[in-house]
Length: 375
Image (cartoon, rainbow, N blue to C red; front, side):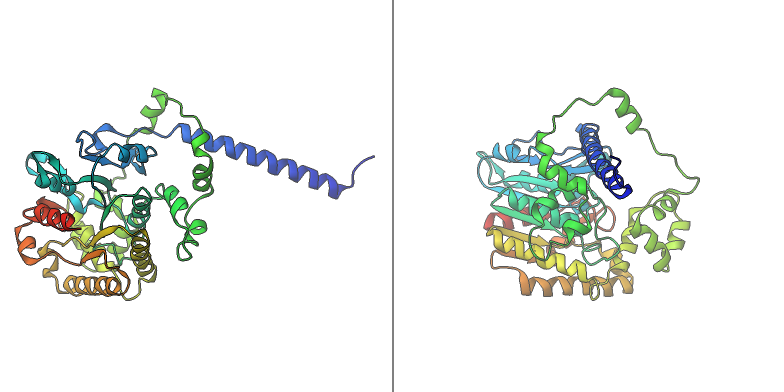
């Protein structure tokens, strides 16, 4: 007997749903297999026995190393998790680059080795939500001390809440509080949830050479300056150009990409009084650190004093520091040390590469080493 039309539609829709779900699972598995491996020159300081780098990079993307627990387990003694964006980057002489945690380790290393070991979570270009999400992963992996650097150019910048989504997979594991729960649906994708639940069962396969060559091809460049390209591809640059009066002239007079221009714009876009989501994330960061019971340092890296010669920049920077200090006074626990600026004698010893990155850290490594040793 022929089924009614309504039953045929139901049977067809059911089959379609099952088929679509099956292909989605297969597609996710294939996508997992074609993810590029990390670039060896960007993985950090794994050659040092006293340090491991937990962030891997490949195909211009960052992610947390899936073998993190094993890597941390090889360290003996006091472990310090250091979560930061590029404010810890040091542009030394002759193009040599290093990072602040490595300089701190060199200060505390004696005849019997360093006083503590560093588990480094360095995310280039990190925004507030990425720092928070990675800090939760660091707390989950149980270091004795956690150091979190919150870039003052982005900490209350509502135009730059996050820059990359691939780190949200760890958010699925760690966004479990009432405050964080909405992000499970607003930000994490279905594939993020899938990989957290089933990724461990998907076998890894070698990536063919032809795919790496195709994936690594340089993107087509528009016939504008590098800064103009950035202006139309990144929210901070876009809004800086149209909302900060002096930025268009700075771009027009610049012949190459200048981080200083966009750092200037990022600070000016900061809105501590109205950045409600930013404040909520900072409150949650202090709360989660308190719940973990670990000792912590949460700090705002100081900016180049030259950036603050502009009176509007100075006003906003003071508001950023004041709002951060106010939130810390209400929500930071007894075991959390909060710094909204480095002491004058430390700041005076620092030489800046631009508005936030360092050229010579001066006395900063010793200062941070002393703080960590006291925790």
